Image (spheres, rainbow over the protein chains, first blue to last red):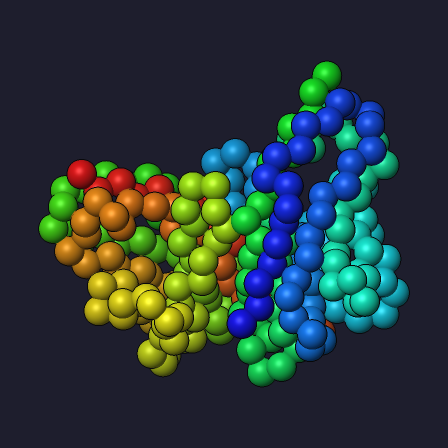
Length: 115
Length: 117
């Protein structure tokens, strides 16, 4: 089974500063990678996903992530954050095999953007 | 598009009673729906995969007789927590799967907060 590690449980950052949220996964097999955002009292929304092709993936709200196969990482970045980006962010992984729609989630990173 | 709803959003029940949670895909048909459990400060744990018209597939360690899943139509799946106990208190989230090229994309409901007294 996969395991997904989000090393930072909380990331405080000032508005307009850059941010990177880290995600590492365990599998040596080919995977699909996802980042989801959860605002308070809401469900998870898809930010971006890596399926194939370019390792740099751009998503909604100015976020991007880079797939690094050698480091088994899929870190999420934004060059300039807004107060409205305050939320919890989850990294998820699924295998490319027949269980491709079975997701494994990290424990989440709470991004707290301060004015 | 791709909106998933859950009902109720919050439920409080007494120990020993059963609670049903509904998950609906509002503007699309989902052949597969998933049920997750989210513990405080922890990740989402997949409980089961629900396919329309067939029995759900439960993850290891999840009691299928306690967490009954029914997927009667392409837009509705239900999770029934039978004989609930305080340790079943949690945040339950469903997702519905839509095929999008290489893989499926999962769209998540807003979750249901279950509190068992």
